[in-house]
Image 1: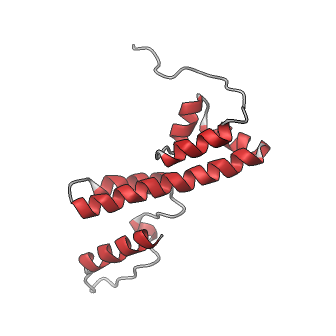
Image 2: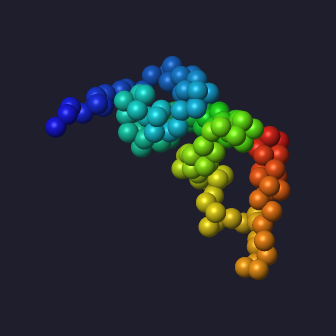
Length: 133
């Protein structure tokens, strides 16, 4: 068997982490990527957030920045038609599920079984929504 790529790093919280986490979010880091960057479990992010208000605010800003980063990638995918938009969409659902619900949770589009869907219009509406956000 190969060696484990992850090193266990029992990082103690440092004041610089609040600023660092915002910068990671701007680069599109997800919660799990941020935790891996610090060498900790995702649950430790929650512990730090509960104990350090500056980190809680920094993590919230980071997640907003990360979501915006990935949304811009989704818009580029639609505009360029050369990227895998469904892959980006799945990434958004996995990391920002409170905002991006799966198609089984769709509360905005209601279609009866006999009604057809104008996919071009729906995609245009979604792109407009993303650009307005």
